[in-house]
Structure formats: structure tokens, C-alpha cells
Length: 188
Image (cartoon, rainbow, N blue to C red):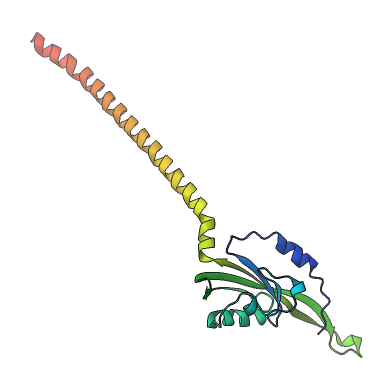
């Protein structure tokens, strides 16, 4: 099937994706040829994604590639695989890039109608190391810890202040009640 598709808008939108240091984008064809990958340019020629990522044969990654190559509209997934080279666990999230086309049911009879055909052009994947994912939440964790510590300090100060105020008021009330009684006892 011939698909008329201009990938420039797809490539431009991929330029704006922010990933951590260990993360990378992968854009592959249904035949697992690389279009976008870490350190790869289309000028380099056709390279299989396994070769580009220098992955050893890995059952988990092979399963992910099979899923990516056979995706349909609305499919997508997320999985972890272990990179033997860097000894890191990598989270990969992938989704299809598809093109809709309408094909005639019978090209000689226009009245027979058309068929809606969805063709997989690319599979897009975002890969991040587990440490990279956790690192992006570290600043939130630090901010939350600091905020909680400040709140605990402020609440502790408020509790101590009000406790001292209550003790002071209780002493004043007690004195104001016992002083007249002691004076009455002295008179009698």
C-alpha cells in the first residue's frame, strides 16, 4: 500500500520533547528500521533499532518490538526491559503513528463505496531509565519534605504558644477565685 505522508511535522514535534540524561526517543517503521534514535541520523542509512541501541538478544525487548510493529489505532503500551550493556532498567512507552486513508471497494464501480483503512506508518517510543524517572521527581520530593518540616515547626510553635496561654489564663482565673476566698477566711 502506498501511503502519502509528510513526516516533517512529526519530526518537528519530537524536537520539543524533554527527556532526562539517560532517556531517548525511538521512531521506527513497521519493519523495525530506525527513523529517529539516540545518535542516529537518517543520512546514516537503514539501521535496525536493536543494532542502534546495541542490545543483546533480549526476549523482553523483542516482545516490545513485536508489539510496536503490529500496533493499530488506539494501541500502545508500557514495559520495562533490562539493558545488558548499561546494566540499567529502562521504561519504554510506545504508541502508533497512523495514517487514515479511504480505499475504493471496487475501483471500477465508484458506487460500491470505500473502505476506511488505517495504516501504521511509525511506532513512537519514549525510553527513560528508572533512575531518570525517579530523578525527575526528586525535586518534588525535596520540596515536599521542606514544606512538611516548615509546617511541623509552625504548628509546634502554635501549640506551645497556645498551651502557655491556656496555662497563664488558668493561673489568673485560679488566683482571682482563690484570693477572695482566702481573704474571707482571714476575716473569720
